Length: 491
Image 1 (cartoon, rainbow, N blue to C red):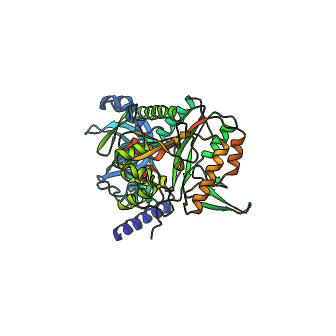
Image 2: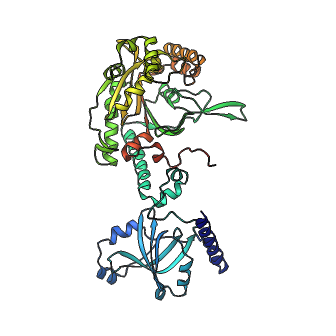
Image 3: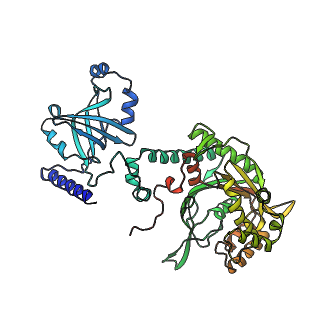
């Protein structure tokens, strides 16, 4: 720490020295003609003789990430958003300005102009005839040979992480490509992208605890949305038949490798479709994105390879429990289910219903085994108060969750459009909340009113973008795919 503080003092001294000779260390007047990637693409195959005969002059800007001083000449590498390129600074070429080389540090952002040539080691290089300070770095970067390895520090100082770990930049470049591919897919299938409110008077659309805020002018509490579902279905009532939204949700829950309180979701709704159609449609979505972004349906993840090739298995939830050895009477008898779960050290809330107990057993015994893509279908109605009942078994609903790499990535169902049934289910959720279920749905009278005007039969789905990016970038923690994840304050 003392060494770092001394280096910072030295850099502040250089900053003062530059200002004392009327050099602005934060000059913004520089317009680079090229990027590092463009130079390598255009001239990477040019030999020494052709570069000299063509006398190619250019200018680039970037951050110094390595520097070697040889007295009357110096080599450095500068890095821009596209990559890095070597520069050569020689006293005979730069003249008196060469004395300013001693004011340069690794981390400084500079603009350089000069001609391209190849060094004795055959590296494409710019021989600099002029340079300009664009931003003086006052804090030293982590040394290149060990980089920034402290995971907590990487998340907290993501700006440094991006500078010194190029593979991190690649993850977020892929994230951007995934988002673009998602939008292109839905627009090509006749969907329109919409934006719905982030602040809700009633939190709805999912089973989760919301964040609460207060609107001073209106004198009312509002809630950061936990899902856009109920607003998107209002749009189905209004006559839009295919809508999607890519945006943030907020849930007041714990932080883990799979959870961040602020996360990105895709939700989409299609009139006149059901959950059976959505399973095939979901296979199409994932195949399209993987092929476009990665060029393959076989995705390395951890110690395995995930094969996204359709079709994927479809297993009823209760059957999945039986396949993992859960006894039949546990599935049918609420009291035996609770005792069995407690015997397996599964934490069960006091007021939890039979369906909730089975869901907790599922999370403990089944979910970790779901590595390759699989649809778990037909959930108990109590777990899905917004889904349509199955015609042949009204105790279950037409719902699926997609699991890949032992985590839920998508959730979908045939949408309930019966306003009478919907109101009755909301009332049951209100009773559950009174019994202590903090994640139970609230009553939303306006949504029921919307259904009373008539909503077409429809299917809807939510896909966790962060978890999808984790899968396609081989990232083991959700924090690795969120630029600025939520963290505890520093001491």
